[in-house]
Image (cartoon, rainbow, N blue to C red; front, side, top):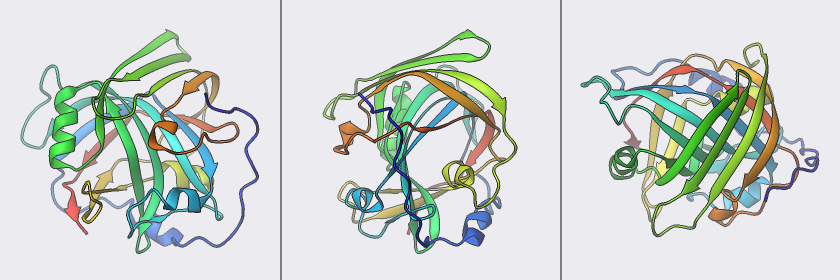
Length: 262
């Protein structure tokens, strides 16, 4: 079970990624996107962790990204919908499903992005496509999102994918006030305004980069009323210390470009 005591004070040291590089990624990439989808009902749960701890779990060329010298790890449950390729409309039975990811933030030669330790999902076809063609560590799971009231959300997930460590997640949260757009350079901007992702081959000898485009996150405050999870621990990482930094987000319309080797 996650420790919900107060977090440690982050260290403050120079960061390797310039703010200009983060802002540049907000520009929509050239060419046509491969996929379009909507992300909604997100809960961002972030914990500060030592960068050197995460570095040991990353491919050799990737470096842990930091804000004021502090690295972060996150659990993010959400609903994905309106999923379609640029060639096809949404396909019934495959265009809407739940997802739950464990992620951290990295950079490659100063280009910041997201590194996923896992992406659990309820759609078996989406899991197969993502693992086969995008090199992403998607895993099958059962999930449920309930909305007992207008401002209350309850999410539960159990991993069912064979051959990987079992894991489960439960959270209940209350939505709060709408926040202004994240200010460039702020912690909120660092944690949520991400427009690039990285993944690798199973042996970590090949590295891939994918671009993402969407508008700035509509963020809200949120209060976590209940939280149980062993998702982070299922990756051989220690239990995060302290209360998470919490935001609710969405919906956003998202475009994704094909992965390319870097």
